Image 1 (tube, each protein chain N blue to C red):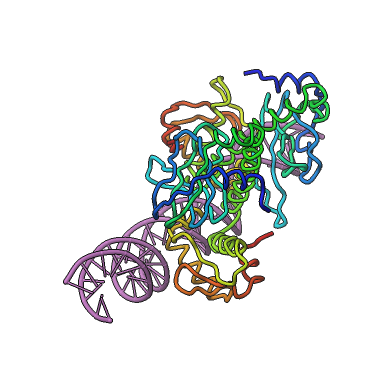
Image 2: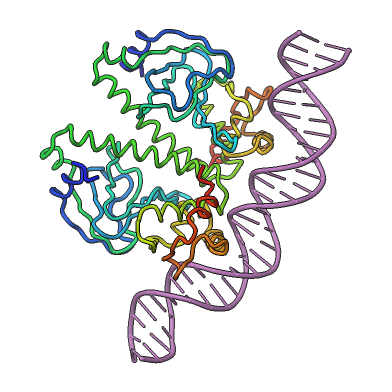
Length: 205
Length: 205
DNA sequence: CGTCCCGTTGACGTGAATCAAGGATAGTGG
DNA sequence: CCACTATCCTTGATTCACGTCAACGGGACG
């Protein structure tokens, strides 16, 4: 569904290029811009005092991010790969579409964010390692209609997102593949062989 | 801070009594009411197909809950103990304060909910068992200025909330008490002996 | 062709779950 | 007021899943 949101950002946004691992915005910066991905992918994460870096979420082509319900960004956003991203200033949106339009966008973004976070939380409380990885693959697969799925992120990012180590992620992928649910071609591309099996492994209620 | 919200609900709400474990609303029901706790406590949880029951959050005297950013409640709310709760229909709030007033309330509630959920998520990803329990006790202690803290919930609810088993929760409490940070008098009442130590144990960055 | 980086695999250790008894506590009825 | 019982909490022994440590492999790039 192509919403008014997309239109506004598309119309007002300026395309910017980011190289892999480049920071798009940092936590604590004033949240005065909104982003829409043209190509590439993005992760949000939070740098902790102890050096750990829990991943908040991943965004792909077409996704909108940066609509925080606060004055400052709560997380840092970085490009997972070389990316082209539309950047629109909030100000511009208000000017073009009115305060109501921005509020509407914020509302949608916040509600979606809440749903995502709840789901993510449930994944972490209720699921074991293989279920987490299976859920993740399933989620990535749902994003596309193509038979082949490309992972935008490396193992470390997956691990941080899933609350696991890269070794465990790797083992679980091997295991899920062994069960015949998916088949990897290289370590970033896979196809879903048996969707039902994958759903079972993901324990998707 | 006594907000307009409180006033509206206090003015429009009807006091209802609930006995321990009584359902206040169920997941999937139309979310057409808002609640404010007069006395007692409430937990929200989600019943899963597999029988597990992750706890979403706890609410205490004065807290408002039931403001869902959707047409239906995403979780079930139940009384932790015998409780008196003000119930106001959303309709009534719109009539009395206008659509804007309700929107305002919804917005606040949703943003707060998002913050809570993010914090909860971080607790689950980053902290081990003893840190989780210490964080929880600290959080409960912060709610009150009294020296003595009463836990409204039993071990099972704590365990579900923290993503642990009751045995582990119990052991960690024993351990934290052994460290001299808190002292329990009965299993639902404790006092914080050494706040600094408790904060250290909680690994509150 | 060599180097670097990332992913995979194996061996081992550990923290929390599970299994299994006890104790404490509160509610109930005599 | 005191058994009696059900429920909840604690504690111990054992198991198991995942983390840690370490080595190896394989693709990308100069």
